[in-house]
Image (cartoon, rainbow over all chains, first blue to last red; front, side):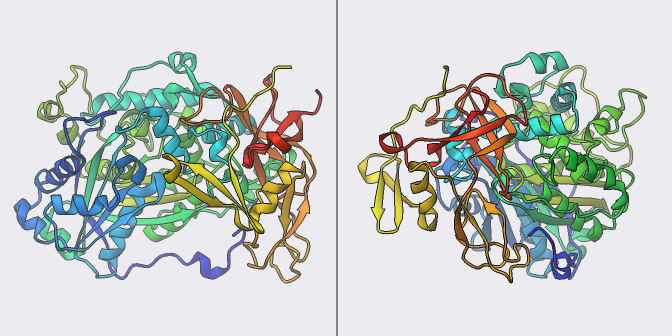
Amino acid sequence: MISFAPGNLRVPKWTRPVYMVAAGTTDFRKRYPDRKLEELCMMAFRMLLEENGLRRDPLDVKGLINFCAYGEFADHFQDQLLCEAKVHDYLGLDLLPNVGIKTGGATGGSAMLVGATTVASGMSDCTLVLGWERMDEVKTWTGNYYIATAACKDFETRLARNYASYYAPMARRFQEMYNVDERVRAAIAVKNRGYACHSPFAQQPGRHTIDEVLNGEIVSDPLRFLECCAMSVGSSAALLCSEEVAWQLSDRPVRLYICGGSHTLRTGDRRPMRIPLLPHETEEGYRELYAEMERQDGRWPGFESFGATRFAAYMAYRMAGIQVPVEDLDLVETHDAFTISDLQTYGDVGLTLYGREQDYVTSGDCYHTNPHTGRPGKCPSNLSGGLLGTMHAVGATGIFQCGEVFWQLQERYDQMHGDPKMWARFGKTKPADWTSLQVPAPRRGLAISHAGVGSHVTCAILEKAW
Amino acid sequence: MDHVKLVGKPSVVQDAGDVWIVQLPRFGPEGIHFHTYGQLTPYFKGLGEGKLLGTRCANSRCPVARGNGELWLPPRADCPDCHQPMQWAEAPQEGYIFAYTFVERGGSGLEIECPYYQIDVKIEGVCTILKSYLLDRRPIRIGDRVRARFRTGAEATHTCLDLCWELEEN
């Protein structure tokens, strides 16, 4: 739709509140031959049950589960239909009900959304959300073709068979419309891959420089190799509960709000529309942008922005009572599959105005420690290392992001990332220069889960409930 | 002139009355997907005849088109705004580059010889922006004018690759 009727804009109202009490994850690797897929899922499930300080024994917690929502991106990769049944049985959860969720790159977020609604509706008091992806059965360029089947098979897939080539035109257009310095995109890759150096779960941590990113091999102009995430293997999990069960299990439960949006599979089919305004925005605030668009034959969301992300944030902010995102949020996880998608998202979620995304990054507000002031950044992004640095085992991604925000809110970043035993578990040694990326006393965080060129997006708000 | 070429074999199509069914090979003769172009068949047939066909909504009660809708490219048989059948009409065979990328390497099975420009073309009177590819390899900019070229007759692949573009100032 290019305009909404009032009924379309109803803000979701759940019957009862939803809480998150535990998270679990594997580490992530490009290839993971020593574990079968269901064995990886068991690793994430065990961490969820055993390492979140829950007040009940792991098997007693398991005894509370009523429903499971599973995220898997592509049957192509697993080469196994109904993988959900294999995982569910392997985790010892038969005969409980489960559903498989599939919304491309947003699969993990959508699994969180579906899991949340089972609790919100009263269908379940305790729901397991678990996702996975195994992308190492095929060579990278066949994997790229599989992913590109998420472009339109009639009109687009044959035009690249490589997903970076569907993001690159957005990067090019964004760069020219908003006069973006390539070094800003490169700085995002440097930041997120750098944060991944502090995570025992990270697949491709690295201390890179902006010049190194820009001098690197080009995948699809203007995107360089280090600006793109990699094929990934692993699993992540979250446990969602009713209020009563949450307080039975945890003294530090986190409240969850989550909403979704969607938009056409083909970027060019996004017809121009007015920007749906977030609570802190005004029409007047975008007068200049609309005028500029007219001059440059631009449009919203065009190739520069994601309507689905804006719609999901529009709903989630109203549901969670977020008024001014940059003030009300203490950290965010964006879906940085490519540097450009990270940059685009800052406008969509209203951390800055559309058209000023570049300034937001250079301001240093999105860093753990603002490089200009040496003080904490206002709203750090992707402290987990993001998709660029840590993981994009697609079906797990949105769940992993919520898990990282959850641990931050519980002020358990150090426990989950800084324990030498956690590094040893994955065959790694904790780096001598490891530093804590814990945000000081955070209250609220956000996680964006994102598919295709913006076809499906969820916006989760997690809020400290104690 | 250094022009981008195709490297794959043309796709086989089956003419089933009004519709084309394109064969997408997967694993041997028994493993072919028979994919119908359905009501969009005129678009693909049109490319082989050098025509660029879009669809438009002419329903006077459509809340967006109001009886005089812009063209859709890619076309669609039904209007998403009022759900009534759309009408076929020829689109202008020229436009300008709205966005682009230079594809250095594509995924397995790519039928276009790398490197090449993948371009998004803005066409007057069309409400969408059409993704395609450019025959020229020389440096381009957003705003450069392009005109449509078609693979027709024996050259036709019976896919979206039958439409490509070249820079107008050639």
